[in-house]
Image 1: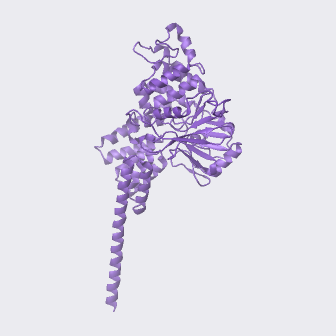
Image 2: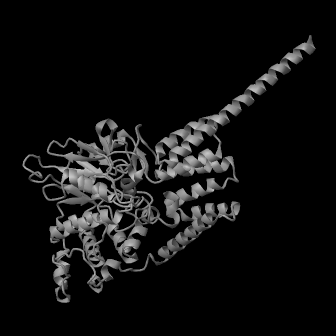
Image 3: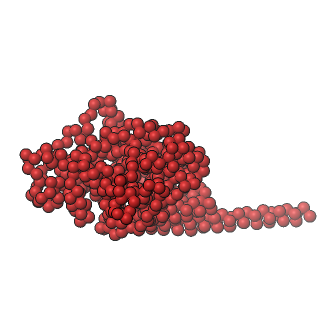
Length: 525
């Protein structure tokens, strides 16, 4: 009967509705379970595992604002700011009253120098959470950054004299309590009448190696060298780098580090303030010298809390013998990254704001890329995505500035490889991802055989991609004391075939990564 049919239809509809309800409950429960696992992974420092778990959770509940926001936080930790902004924006769409969505987006925007956008998001957080002291602190940091940018823009057209041209290290007295090394040797500084001699010692190739090795030992003992010597080092190193091309052309040394080893160049990736791991590299591979040259491919500082010791060690070796070590700029040798990720705070804690400003000047003049025997191209991030870029184009990039948002310098510092052809906006929010076809075209255009870059943590310390044409090398093992990755370095001898050495982390004094990060930096720990 018609009535019976209606009952059957209604029962079927009710059963289907109940099934959908149960399915919804299951999906929500599964998403919650995976989210909790992701949170545990994030707390344990297993950021990649956390992202995987959050992504699986979002397959069950795609519009969950909490999970989207948590994944955004994980992306921020990996400096994938573009993906973080995307997730945080979707979290806000899912729940416009969810304060953490604005908080995460503001964090990523601040890292990308988008201070006005970040300020707007932190204002919203303060509206939603008026008693949140942390949000008010972040908003104040944004206000300060916006004002600083406006002031910098206002004086940009004025002729400003670099600090390195006016700062006088002679005014810094080495007091009798200083028990560290002196560049001329002995237990006392040079006299006032020997100022010119002391200055001469810091010219390229003149710095005594005994002083360098004594300084390295002092750093290992958790002590510093005197600020007077640091200032001389930074000023002279800046003058040394500023007359160089943006592209360094390296050749193999005439002999190897010992009778049994062929001439070679050692290429290292990010070391991020992990001084004791840098010492481990030298222990395994020998200290830098004319017969044992190194190339460190950017990101010497930030994250790790011994960044001052790392960069001073590199610069000391460079000024003692410029053929012993080559330094290329990374995206962390920049003012904004240093403000966020701890180097600014570390320098000001160990020295002062003037020394930090001298570091910034120096960073602006570091070269951006290198070739080895005209076959291997080395740069921190990756390749330009516009076709036809030549080595001459890179050689002639103007330096002495912070990186612009786009262009050749930005691409070299920020870009990442991708497995599929073509280019795509970077997951970082700056630069692009470039495919194997772009790598092949660039290498062919410039008669090169291989790209070596860094910029990304890799579980094994290195990764070969693009049909063997692109290598990522990362030299900071157990990155940030949490990633569990190996470190690696590469040897290139006359064959120009890469030979990899992997290693684990070594113990370091009990100072945690990001220990000197303050203000906005606390968001990125």
